[in-house]
Length: 414
Image (cartoon, rainbow, N blue to C red; front, side):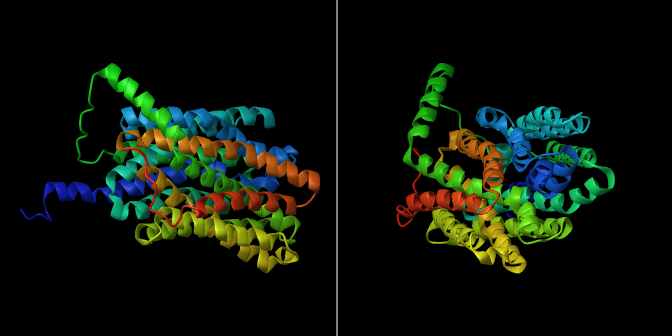
């Protein structure tokens, strides 16, 4: 038997299957929530919602992960990712199917909390599963492909859900989202398995191990590299939220596009995000400036896009569409290099916690920004203050990140 045909080599070839199912489960679990922006006009019409109330729907699904991501991170450091992610995706499916019977807006908000609880396990669990199967030479590319699942699911949702809502009503979109999430849960539980590497035993007894884990986690929170990761993450996730939830409304109200064409532009924006997450993450594997260099590039590009939207040029349908696609590539594409940076910065036995911590901080922005941006737009009756706020947040993060971009990538404690 040759080395190429050895069982170990065949087992490692399975990493591409793991990558495929992790990406599909990510796309399936985020399918409905990421598509809310595309059916925003239908929801506003049928439920008589303001822009702020529409944004609050997204926040409701993202509220529980503020704590849930930390809990999921701890579970992932202790349990098989197969069960953690599979159960999470299953909870998303159940939540959406139950939400389809919600009698009104308030009950819909409450049921979406269950959806958020399930997604808390899917996001860090899929990232850890991919990171475990790929080494540093391919990890950025693999993580970019996996993280492309979110805008991929959003693009498919943006293409399909408006037609479902128009033909069958908004409740049918929840049923569709639940069935898609159920497929994701079945795929991950049916095909995922851990890489063929046995983890080294931990030193000391259970009590010593518990004290060591707790101390290591507290030190991690105070590390400068984590502060930088969280600052860049919160600013860019805010941009992603703003573009995702407001693109259709902006094009409809400012550029005078119909609901259908505006939703198709959002599909293009999400598609650009898919390409961006893969391309930028792959570039970060080979670029001399590493992961942070990719993040700095994304933040600079976001500032350019926001500047265009704040000028009269942003009212031109052609310019607005091109600018939003630009923001899709960089404003969604940053996530691949960012997640890879988190996994590589953390100590090997605390990757799950690091992912949960960084993502839970992002959740603050994910919860706060959609209704806040919607309220700002309602109060000002203009999108310009919205883009200005996102530009200011990005500029602050870019300033902090650019100071250390020329140095070697900062890593966590060994």
